[in-house]
Length: 517
Image (cartoon, rainbow, N blue to C red):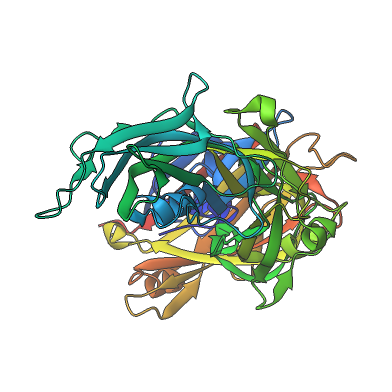
């Protein structure tokens, strides 16, 4: 069963799980017993870090340099790599059989609207081509891609021949289908303003001169690119909707708890060498009171411009965090209102200003990733923050006892008061009796200085008496429901810090009465 972080304090106080040595049982009040036996239950010291150690897997604990504990929650906003763009180009021409219907044709590249590329590096690819010769004379055909250059700087040019046609039977054919030309490592360098790759051919009939191909075609197979440079057009990259669950308030019943300095950070890792801006479609916080509160601030309205690597930083990843805090947003209001979950939908827009003078790049390993990090430091205040939880408790092992009295000694270094009431429940969930006649403050908070840090410790002793009639009422107990009311010191009017090294020393013992034979 998952337990509220603060409620663990109360449950630890009343836990019957420890049987360590206990030497301070004198002073128990009540009627004389015919016979009695004392049972030490707890003698231990727990730090706030110990108490919170069994937190939910949804959150992580972090201790800062001042010792303040932070609850952190994370989620992915959007992840994108260059496959989308390169795949689009690959699929538009790779494997397509393109007829040589003209002596100069443009390949049907599929790119974002407005794309103007300066350089395109081919990682892998095979060029296959062929033609038929219906002419009686032998022909020589040269296939050129004038803007595609080899690693040596030469434009791509292939030459092939076919014999003359005799006038009967099949037309003479040339094809390199069994030995495609490897274009790996070639670069496309079009003239300024040209956004296509062109293919040209020239046919020479022996003794006649230039002519055209009656039937010919070429194709590019297994085509992949490793680098693209230029202007890629304004395009929206969809992020999708997601939710982060905040489990801090799982056991909330009523009351208020306020985090004085919460933050939400957009953590951006970017290897795309192009301008990119976030677009927040949705960022809502759902609260324990059923409210839906939107995140507001300049970074939400105007978007976040990603930092990105320049043309001389190809292969580098630029990482930066953009923080929403109480100075630039309403994050303290919406996260200080008992958040249960954060729902968000964030897109990214490439070349958001459509500035064609900004030239960027993509590689086949380029990516960007936007993550959201929620930080709730244990610095703030609480007023009558009520939580409840239940755990198993059986009194069957004390069947010879007819009454009991518990003594609890606490030494508290935390600036946190806890008032507790417990309810003994039978197997059907019916209340048999309460632990205290009235809700009792069993843990008194330590005094805190102006910075909210406790300056000492507070000691308190609490008794719970169960005479025979009360004890008989709780014999059928199967579960104990604990209701805890938390307030920071000074009636919740002061922001305090809970530090990892602070803790509570606990001593719990009981005397059970048993009649003499």
